[in-house]
View 1 (cartoon, rainbow, N blue to C red):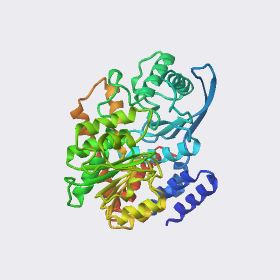
View 2: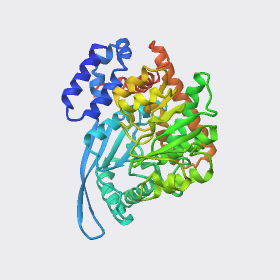
View 3: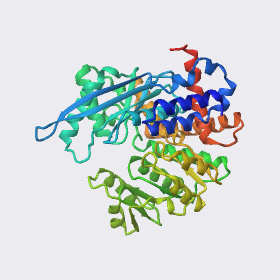
Length: 449
């Protein structure tokens, strides 16, 4: 490992010893960059890596809201504007009880390189709150979103920072926040948020975009191996927007998703979750349900349900974790490898622990990294920004074609970067190098600050 890279990693371990997930993410990315730093000694002189792991700015603020019984509650809000070298900060807002500064930083570090991979001029941003929308009424969620935006609106804008949705933040929450932003600013800046409804500047296919993009990336990966998607079986975790998008596009491309999962376990549908319109449509009902039980699918369609288990023991051609970060640990990776899975696609952000990912990379399978595989979501968000700035609304066919082309470019750029540095067809290292290179060149061109 390059000495400068090793030193920065050690510094991160000391400085952020209480944020192990952030350390894990930084170590995974930086350890891929040794050959790049070897070729560019000027990066050390400018302390490029040291600057790149520190946010340009991070805001923490109080969010006070009143429940339906008139009781006041106080939550903590965050927004991290990590790196704006290639464009306005861009990234989601997460409303979840476990949100804290460390999670925001690890997510935005990944987001910066993912955004660079899209080829679009967007920097890295991320935010959210430890507020839990589950079990709250519509009125309570609206009041929280309005309070959150009241604290945030001073720091965002179409040419400054453009938040989007993430876990716990969907179209409903985006709508409430946009309404409050418009009330506070008194202007129609619909480019300030993405993931909006179609009636006020949203983009076609945004809910499905991450899942669609993952399938397009997979298609390119298969083509590179002289393989095709037709007839492949896929194990998917999760059942939200991302899993729904995977199921829809898999069916269109001729593949079969046989598992989906939730907090209570997973189902195995031998005929395929994608075998009927009714099944695919039912995912929308499950997603909207306050019950949040994957067993509902098993009960409705008469398929096996495995309580408290993950779907990684199922024998399939392709494994696609699409639920949350670090959902695949070493024990899961060992099951995946033992089942002879040919292709492993990280769809959720940082879905695999470092040790599990490194283990899978040593096996006879092709690994697609999250920052490349799931970039379709932010890619379509950036397309929404373009439409907003030009007062356009592209058709579904236009957005889908742009997304497909974008995912091909991301795959090809990752493969080329790995090959350039003698790493073969290593898409994990290639994605890190391709994203880093774009950000690094922009930072070097703009001077030291």
